[in-house]
Length: 213
Image: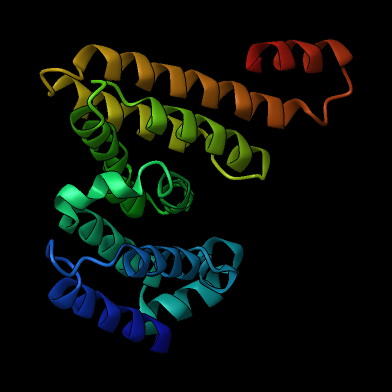
């Protein structure tokens, strides 16, 4: 709780003194995001790993602090405005870590940041595409799922939210939809592969490997 209060202090200082064009400090903002993500993903806050009684006790006393800091990360990202492009692709991995935390409200609040990153790169890169974001997300997704994160609910929600946002966008509708379906099918294959790695059947394992490739 003390750490959370400290991070909230940093939030207001960054917004007040280090956001406008003349005083923007890339390294400070970078440090802020990495600190907030490290806090949110810290093992002592992962309520799913505790017994129901312990979980209830913590929620009653402190609430789920991951949601509080996650909503802050989201707001701080949107505050960046034109500075966002400086954080792509470096911030894709940390934001992915946040979205993979199995808390439904947190996921719904932070997955749309991915669409914002796509839009941002599309508008500012000059190439009218989002290849940097795309490559980074696919690479990091592979690592995270192999590390045991991600689940079927995540796959469904990620596809749903990306498709919803892309279809509303004049220029990203087609390429965004292709990307959302690609990521969803990759995630499905990675989850299958992770599940079947302990399967006795060599054929099943080989089939899953081929699908991922």
